Amino acid sequence: MSRGAQRLRIAVTDDEAPARSRLKDLLEDISVTIPIEIVGEAQSGRELLDLLADSPADVVLLDIRMPEMDGIEVAQHLLKLEEPPYVIFTTAYDDYALKAFELHAIDYLVKPIRLRRLHDALVRARSITRLSLDLLQNIAPEARTHLSVQERGKVTLIPVDDILYLRAELKYVTVRTALREHVLEESLSRLEREFDEKFVRVHRNCLVARSHVEGFEREPGEGEARWVVKMRGLDERLPVSRRQQHIVKELGR
Amino acid sequence: MGSINQNRQQNALPDFRNLGVMLRILVGVSVMTVAAAATGTHSLQTWIQMWITITAFVAPVTILSLVVLGAAGPWLRRMDYRFAVVAIVIMELAITTLAAKFSSGLLGNTRDTMVRDWFLAALATLLLLGYFELRARALSPALTEARLQALQARIRPHFFFNSINAVLSLVRSEPRRAEEALHDMAELFRALMADNRDLIPIRRELEICHQYLGIEQLRLGDRLTVEWHTESMPADAMVPPLLLQPVLENAVYHGIEPAAEPGTVTVEIRLSGETLRIRLRNPYRDQARHQSGNRMALANIRERLQLHFDAEASLATRAAAGVFEVEISLPYVKERR
Picture: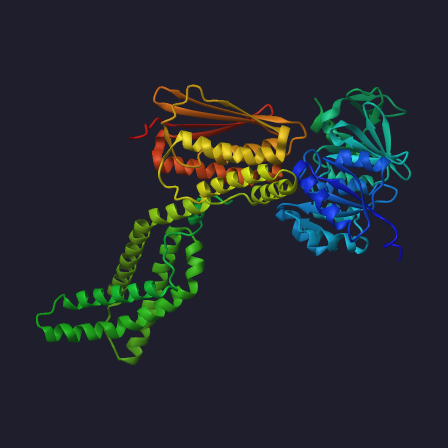
């Protein structure tokens, strides 16, 4: 294999500066025996995605407990990259995830991290379990805080709270915010399960954000009049199917 | 979940599988049979004869009872105490009935004393249960205290390992700061592991808080700012040890660490009349996953306040408009010199 010849590109992610500098010290020690290159460091998932857009990495060292988005969610967004990096999670103490990691043979390092452990993890990085959306959502069943889409080689994050509606098209889902539309390759029924607290189905192909519903209107159609929902900040009206008409009463105001 | 009141999961019944408990039951029953034999006898001889007759009936009942109680013990102890008592009395009546049936068959006993036997069995059972309840009550303050101590010494593992990691990161580049941080950690852990039953002056508690914050600052840097308003604080006020530090730790853990932006924790300590008021505020975002630790620390402080000051002290929390607030009031007790 060509592992020996190629340098392993590594990105470090942790919200705490001392933890990042400790990791870099250790990686420097390791570079004596394994050819590695630190492509950069990030203090949040968002920063990491920005970093990887410019300098791709083979391995990401990813802290689990971080503000805005935890490491497990970040790993889900990393999957949207053309070539997702291998992820090695790091944690000081996080009982809820570690059991699941062991169960699924996902690699993790416990802080303070020993040189030897980091070395071994990097050596076997390419043979560890490939993460998948199913696997990660299984470990952290809480809803994501962001959705992510790949646009022109870069992963764009969309805060779930900004989304007005999600509509299934033929092979993808349209994500609508007040500003623009994104194209997401996920299934609407899975999104409905994940975000059932924030979104409600108004039609076979459409979920709307409860908090952004402005009101319902009757719209005359051929034959019978039908209900449509008006979203805040959007002129477009979305049809409510006959089957889902009960939500007009539930959310109507 | 993990409150101090874990004992409430088990009622006041003793562990019937404990050898000491069994022995106490045997001795108790024997004393009662001796006393029962003494009633209505005039000579020592008839007393002994009477005692042998009674024991021939009571001993199998007692031993069978111990076996049944030993088997049903764990189940009984999880029940509501009153139901458990009723269940035990019914069990004893059943065993007594069984023994009476057998003894009348075996010994040809024709005494028709079932009602009296039932009455005595129920009485003996209740007396013994009453004794065990009194004993449990006498022991419980010591148990409570032991548990308080144990909880106090609990250090959040997350904090512990992250701090060590932070110090490790300094060892190469800034050895002096690493030394300083290790000293802070040593003193903080000394305070956490000390015998914390007695009140301490509040200035000492603030020292502990500053050592703790020194370590957190190392990790969090600019993300953490703490504002102190202690101008009108009486430095000689006596407070339970570790009254404020765990609340600060909560504030950092729930308010600063999960936030993307830097945050400020505000601590205000002042005297109003004869009451010392401590108010702590931190930014707060609703995150359900990390709530249980919070409740445990606060419940522990509340309980210790009660232990020291009873109804005169209070701890209240409020969460509104992105701010979490803890307010502690306690009587102003001056340090004795």
